Image (cartoon, rainbow, N blue to C red):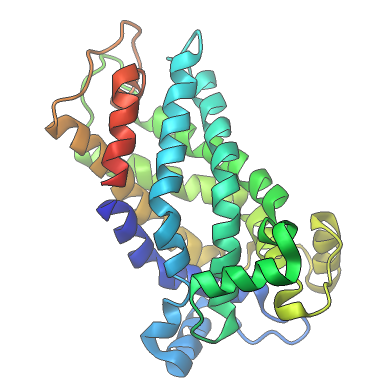
Length: 296
């Protein structure tokens, strides 16, 4: 739990910059880039402004990570060929799908808090969304979140798997874990980012009872391309990638080392070229233990 929260705390200011760049007025943009956005937010609201909306991801990060890694491990274990890259990708898709149902409402509240400019709590913002828009409003952007998360987690776990496989099943070094985890985070965001910016605009649309602009994600894409060109799909990408590497590098490295220190790594499976991470996930007993580690 401490690791999860640390990642959110370190990366949230960059996420706030990303959201502002993604959702600013397209006809009269306020920011030309990430640095200008950072200076403006810092001058206007101080450091507190950069952390606006952090309570929403902090409250849900443990549950989301437990779902992600729990579904991933169990899905791989239940397949006939758990040691293949294909099984890794299938498990990644399953974990992305399942966690979307938690992540979508959490990000909806977070995004609206980040751009609102006031100090309402996550609970109050969530209640307001429900009172104005009902259950459908709480899950606004769910379809787009799923469309983002499935390819993101397929890429995420597949990249880490490829970078940590060894021919002799030997333990990988901490540096390898860090580089593999950070690279996995960067690659997954590069693949999924265009969908993320559409999701952010869909979730911002109709905020505070204002008339909705977009009918759906396709309409959002068409209107945005018409006004800004296809370049809009990468607005805010730079701070996202800067945040992605250290957060994901530390996540994989610390979880793997936690398992090593507790001496709970099961014996290597017979097939060669399998990462240490996967050997842990194949164990039925350690599925529950891993979720427990993430929640502590």
